[in-house]
Length: 222
Length: 222
Image (tube, rainbow over all chains, first blue to last red; front, top):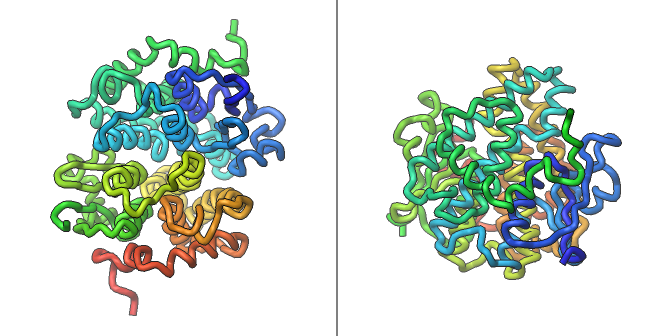
């Protein structure tokens, strides 16, 4: 199996983290191919990687020669080609809810805190680290506020975002919480998100997908 | 049918425009419920709308009492509940490609030019209209550069983004081109995108979804 699937990613990339969770939840073995987003002027801009993904972004999944990009499209592809265990519920209404929760993160929240956006804010508008923190916490806060309401106020929320099995929504939520903590966003106002995050972190699939557990993560300080 | 489906949107919202295209391509009749994003401090922030969508964003589709949010999740829902004509190809690889093309727009490109982001850049960093134009053209350009390469360099591209029938990818591309033109991005460098855009605009489903064709669009300047 390890020859079949290979994931180009970066230990701290939120989008790659989502795909790692999905691969692990489905029990799929894959080869890790690190793309260092900061070293050598950004390895994602190198011609070899650009040939795989003209967007010059991770993740990129190789499935027996097929090149797949965009984290959400990759998870949907895995769902269609390796349906067990499912990461989407069986009913259309439930599937729509899980996708909507996932897309709050993937379409509205995460894109604003992406490395390339922070780099542009720095070079174009001269934002320093503190200002980048203000920007990041603002958008993560707006997104998590909405997510907390969507999760806390809905009977379909269970041990996880939707029912009692992890779904695509949890695979998006956990990396976003990682980012929130990294930017020191106070998490007190998000009891439902914190509870679900904790339930996810108890699972080996999430533990093995964590940034610090990746081969390209720097060794722990100290 | 018009009692069944109701779309909360805004004439110039790119995400609502996508859903209008999908509804029209599927031949579905729906009631239009305009949410004015600028008037009255933004009607999307009113308690009645917030109760439907805690994100305070359009679009929001009501299907016989079911409340659906997030444009891409809505289109996937329509695909599952009204499969004919399909807006995704039948094969997993093709579906992954169409979703990835759509998500280049929905996850990486459009979120950066959203009204709320431009409003934040104005109030926090004092960007004027000219600077907002530089910001918008930069991110739309980065996204369209990647899309042009992904489309021009792939044999799966046909009359439309994927083959000879319009898909979810076209439903995302056309509103984004509308935004590009609005921000006066030069389009010469995107021959494939322009050709596909033209093929889409020849279809009634796209014409009827256009911002200027919506009941809440302002009358044309005389």
